[in-house]
Image (tube, rainbow over all chains, first blue to last red; front, side, top):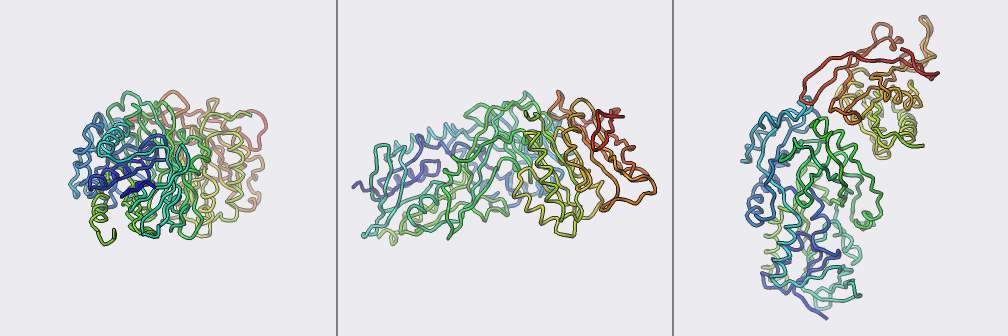
Length: 376
Length: 210
């Protein structure tokens, strides 16, 4: 039976990053991804925003962490970011949880660059609906370029990668290791590893359930972003309206179009994984869900703030399951989940809500690796 | 039957309406889902003190098209309608008072508006004559109205917002009131213009007067 030091489950951005980290720590690493390609699910289908704090005017810690991670991400992946546009944050006049003044002062207090937008941009907005528009410093990442970069790094480091391979179950062996059954394109296989890292995001509890392990409380949403062609007035401009039931429109670099997402219409329905209750396989829910676009609603509401959006051209919708920790509901923060020994010794669960908080995770992994007592 | 390719909003003010709201929403939803692909029901809770808020919260779980706005204090139903109009995203907005206005009238009113009327006002055919006792329930006024908002459906990025006046004088003569409309363009410049208004009778006979 093949033996590894670490098995990483899930080949999204966090799985790839974790696998490389473990390999550099000297581990023999196996990485299993159930899809036909890496970073093809939630690591691809998301806003592609590299957060720089502007999204979290009600969570000081998240804003500060986000601002600390932003330059690290840009430095580590300079060729994977799209800086060809300027990100504008507007504050809604009604129904916003913060006022423009509060927003401005908060961003200044966390050291973020923020200035009122120039007249040529302000002209695009309806000030009956927005209170103020700010120019900010934020960019997007290209998930396809990021995938290429990460796959090259992981393979270069010598991680064994298996695509189309789903980790079915995990069990502790009598010797204290972990045994995994894999479903591969050519049939079932078994491998052993000392450590297993579950980096499967919305699938975290699916593996736990198949293995009889404790469920981690998570909330899932079926989400839709509309991919749109934009009018010329919006070239080079990304817009996010804060901080309530508003919307965001910004470039989606791999497709050359923009994504339009809306707080009210992007989530189509939601469900929760609760300990002690039967959990649903999130990708199973995704596959079965009826997917009728909400673009007509998104664009009509968004055009009240930014009238030029009536000239958007709908291309298609990008659907995915978005998973969050229930505790982040109240303050909009996106903490990472790092559950060490989550029901089995040396079985760890990692979940990051967004691409750039990968750096919050690395320290936790290093702690696991240095914890010799736990390896014995 | 092919469904109309437009988004219709129904705005309804609520005040201590817990007993009737579920039936109203079900009836409106039945009409909207039959005639339109895209629609929303904006319920404006005028700071009810009964179980209205809780009832609507339950309805939010059952009907995806329902949105709720709760006013921070009781402002009267004209203000509630104005708040709903301000939040509605439809190409056509129908304001309805639950229990008084017939949901079946929605498609006809919207059709008339689609053919060019900016404001369509419904008039109850069974409204009381002066001196008659008012019908049971709320005040004897029916306020069904469709307001066209040309944001997406027409060619320009214009919005029509209606600033509703409370019906002047006797409240059962709502049909005589013409709501002024201001049409806005993208940058916030305001233009006044004349409004082509129609009154129609409810339940409908033929065509429209006005």
